[in-house]
Length: 276
Image 1 (cartoon, helix red, strand yellow):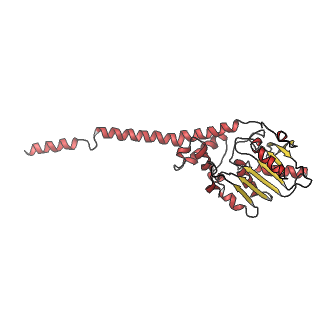
Image 2 (tube, one colour):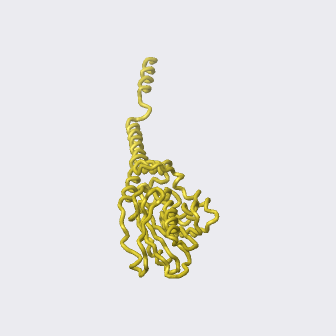
Image 3 (cartoon, rainbow, N blue to C red):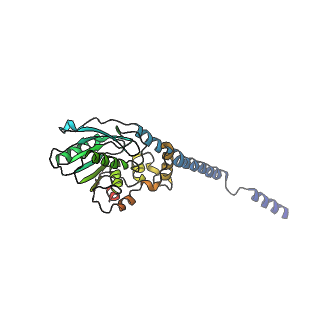
């Protein structure tokens, strides 16, 4: 009887703690999770970065010009301090005493014809306007997209060009749409200017990745945006950090210049609560 009990105990001790089917299921789940994490944190950030780089390389010249709206204008070209050629339109006012001078630019992956109707409105309101293509966009010289960090320097180059030409009539206003709005705000924090108009600026990298790329479903996951930026840095040969693309600290540095912010309730990219 004793021997029989011992043998039964040994047989029980040999039985697996986890049934074979459950162990296989758990192993499969671990493998699937590993694959998912690899895709989310290694493959998809690279695809996001690749899409941004390719979009930046697909540049187009303006298809319209101020003359089509009955305005007098001049094609102008000048360089930034780091040697990048910028192209634009100088649209003088028909008034003997213009109400001011507006430096105007567009959104990401576009050119100055995107903001041409704004330029027409401003000229008709009595302002003189210089509308230009940001670096790396439209007809301006090549440069990797930096989310407004380097592009903002273009406003200073335009202001210097206008000053040399003695074309400036005060007040001097920086006006940008989308990426251009980010640039106008950044430039307004460091350049002498009388006012800034920011139409639909994006507050940070999350607002772009989460709404305009294949990374949207994963933008809330810890570390995903940082992985996207790392992949973009490698693809574009840059060294950007998350804090470089945060507009919040920039806004706090603009203390003595009036700012007009535009944001539409139906805008799914630059949402009103974030802009405010």
